[in-house]
Image 1 (cartoon, rainbow, N blue to C red):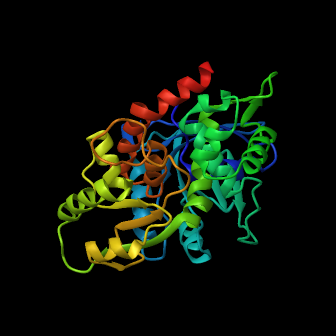
Image 2 (image 1 turned 60 degrees about the vertical axis):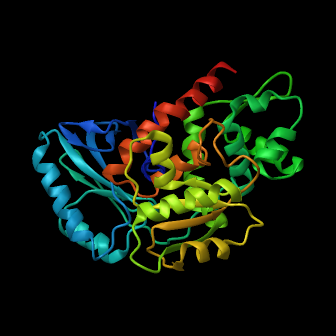
Length: 354
């Protein structure tokens, strides 16, 4: 089973916090002869309502009309018994007003909810944008990364391997494992070791935490080229540099290398924590740009590179899959699916056997 997109997972959690609401989700990109992100079924004591899910990148006043037109067009193609539900990140009041005026049903990650059909009406507008503090810290996320990367690592007699991969001390590892156990992501064995309770659930939680917290901690900056240089030229140049500098390639470029499927238009560069990122920006002639297509992140721990033997220094599939989730457009959905089926599902199978 493929993991839910982190935004979808969080939106479902917000929906299920409402009384007498339960849901099931099928993650399948091709539904009702249309490219979608899944099928969400909402159960109430009296009815069952099905929605075709569309996950869209953060919607602003500049893009809301385009998204409204797209949802209306999609709705026209569907059978009458199914509707389209917009899933997205935090919406502004002005954007919500526009969606409500056009009767676009939506849920955002902060808990704003609008459902309006013959069987169900819900309107929730969050009174505060403050999010609850999670018990899962960035250190816990690093430990989760280590055990998702190698589920068998939990069976080792000492914590040394987890310490090495996660880049945190043994006390933090113990505390993080206990947290994951208390939150039902791990099972405790009779001999005192742990095993993963549900790999997909832990992966979903890790990706959500990566996007919301861990990535922010390791982000150095977003850049673009100073001149109109072809992206392919930059890609070749960074690959040559990476071979000798302990730099790891992720994001779209990493996904293209590891799957052989995507034509990348952006890249993520993972550099050692002690490395001077300005050396990279100088070599590639990059300039800071919040909308740029070159992202530089700090590596954490000692296993950000994939364990699979590849000629290029590519980031682990977990890191690449999480980066692809940041922009859920059509071209990246299929790439993420291929990446999951080629690499990550094998780890899931190992977790189930351990």
